[in-house]
Image (cartoon, rainbow, N blue to C red; front, side):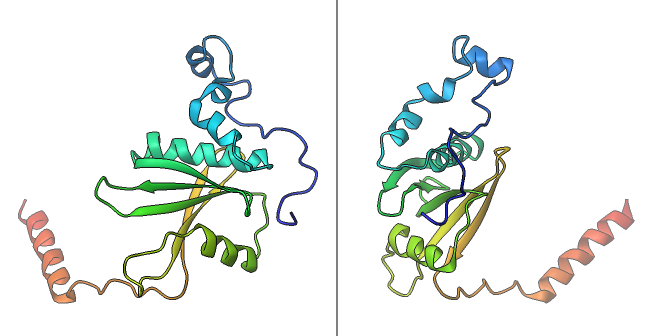
Length: 179
């Protein structure tokens, strides 16, 4: 694929290699706890040839599940796109959202984004709701930036009444001054 960075021949390096003492302790002395994780091994068994894409997907999986406490985080392999997507809910009753993990060094064209949007986005009950995905851009140091994308324009929520906002600010100022 032309989007993949050239010259990448080995497994991506990250927290799993070498690791800290805490990581080594969790894996019973070895620093490779990630390779033994059931979700990582399930992702590796998907028909995705780019191991850095799988590594990025697993880091996003851990961030959503452990770091952000999202619900029902599941991985879905899209072999035709060579991507691992994640479906998750921010809140228990919330809508299912699609996360598309992408390593930061992978170049993505507009055409590729449109293809990802069409094949990865979940259809909504309301036909007027535009398709949406969230790109999870994963840096080599495991930093993840989430970038929500929609197909078309999405109108912003209307602002609260400015008079109410000004009134609340005045009440706060008055409380501070009276103390």
